[in-house]
Image (tube, rainbow, N blue to C red; front, side):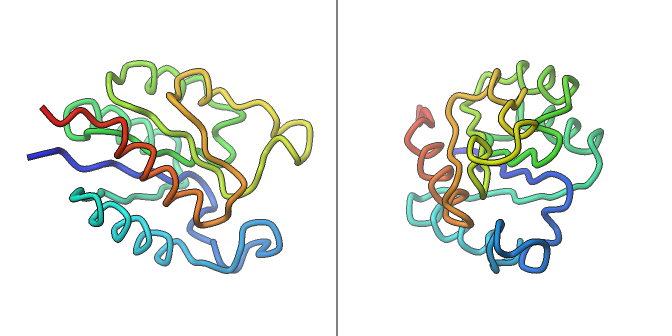
Length: 147
């Protein structure tokens, strides 16, 4: 049986739907979870979907993905621009890593245009709102080795 795709969301994403909906959309994080589960199920896969505002918790989950996941989708939120520790954890993975953003960081403030996570990511999906997560699931599913 194929291991699940782990989907991790970073700080403030628990506020989706209410926090700056003009940038991040009106979908809640629970809406995103449902969309990810449906997209994965359509490919015969499952997801483990988690969110934390705490860097260390995200790092623990990345480390867990080393043995428990077939791929990792991560929206690091603000930690993508600041966390070398998260980058170091991601670099230990031997599974596909898809970086995901609701907005397009390249079209936003200068400080958002660099993400450390990209240095460890297999690919990046950004700028499609909640659909970014679904597209990231699709990308991960296409990269999973089913041996």
